[in-house]
Length: 226
Image (cartoon, rainbow, N blue to C red):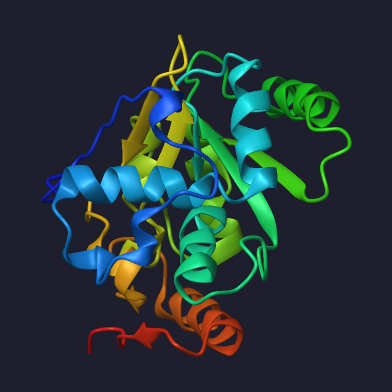
């Protein structure tokens, strides 16, 4: 699948500009802000989730190739802050994707998972680590549709069931902040969920969005295309 999304966003910043508890969410309509201000807003909002910040910090010590913290823990933190809920409410787990095509064995991935179990010990939530280079080996058996091999972590993020899910963040060496957002950030701040019918089947999207709508009734969930 060609990647071709409208936007890829990368932000590098200094921690001193993002004080915990200071966010432009207090201003109107963050989804309408320019991209650079949305990136600042995203970082400030995510900093309110103590577990998320700790996961980022600890994952950086694992030195995983091409890693991102991704999916629900990110956009759900934004939903919580925008709607006035506690930042960690409703977040089931924290997903770490990395990409290592040099060894596609389960044993190699399991070694990383076990190392992560030690690194994340004591956190109040589950952290799941997955090597996206080997997802195609098991995806069809689990979801009923074949998955072409990913060529990067970004390629895997591109194929989430909803465009809102297509978001990843990580610390770069030296403490720089990187954001991958192929569909931008406006929908995330505006509580809009759109289908992304490139891989996951319709039932996956509808099951996930039904749960999200129950937890965050303010969401606007768009239907799967006919």
